[in-house]
Length: 518
Image (cartoon, rainbow, N blue to C red; front, side):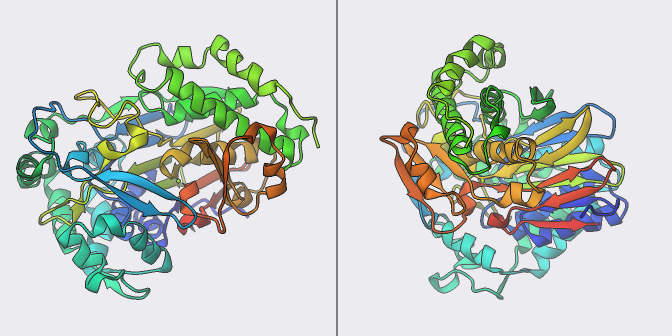
């Protein structure tokens, strides 16, 4: 049922949602709450996220235009000649699937999270930053109790945690993940955040923190320099806008790839009357599979490496380009038969949807901060041209896609997801579940998902295996059936605004999603 109009927050864990709710109750607006909740996520979810990464916020003040704040990670200004690079592979086990990433100081790009959160607060916040930071400061100082979700996350990223003495001592004492019910604290992070709340963000980008990172990068085989930190900027961009069956979708524009690919898949699906199929039927799932496969091909052909071209969006979503792939989608048509995310809507209907990530972490924790740097230069999906071939001094492309859906020019849905390359397909499926099949919000978020990539289709429980096995379009593609729903498929946290102004939230059960009415 709709929540009362005190504001609603949806995020990936109870502490993060509670922090945002406290801020709303203290008189903060949606942007204060989103910033404070994101800071808390760096504590409550510190095994899988960090201030040492980057992100995006899509902000839509009531009856005003939306703005996409881009504070994602930046490639260093200079590669230079390196005698050696601190860069090596690790493999993470998601239970029913494994994935290899590269970590080390040479995998770390310029972090933007602190810069972005301070920037958004200056532009849109209502109450002092110190008040916003208090929940995260106190949690980092007093400690966080390990839940089953936190315990599982520590085990998931243990190959990364293990390479760093500081992180290992916090999360893997005696070589084992902290048990459920035990606590960990981040006292250095608490002290740093308290100092920055009073003195601003310059300490991280120009002071001792940046200087220590740069020294270690120089000594141990990384790329980062003081020039990289001093020159980092937060960009304010016009969101990508598209129409899907009468709804307006606002999402992350180029140079990021996620929003563009979501738009591409939706425009292809618009050529098919999905509502003529039963939910979960062969016709429904086959069309989803086809647009995922086609988007992978289109990305490799015209998007990878082209994100900074002035006409990339117009070319990629042009009628000619869509027609080329749409014709293939319609062939043999059947007859009908996961990063962390926070979404906030306050009691004045200001909307904030923010996604942040540090990848899997670089394995390097900045001494005296409890902050692990990102490994965005070691993410294969973010480096499609190959490792160490990234263009210098450029915003890294991303799949992160905070999204707002408008119905008759009024906000209808605010959402986003974690999940690396699965973000685009997670958001796609939630949008179509709501618009094409009118599912209840919780079902739209938590029903089983599929994801196609690299000649593989991953399938969650809730999807009929016989339907997947019957698809001719999947001939030659390996099928991987997950035994249980997994954070591998993303973590969509969203809030829906009904016609009467009521707010309904849904948190993704794959990531301990927590929704609170404030």
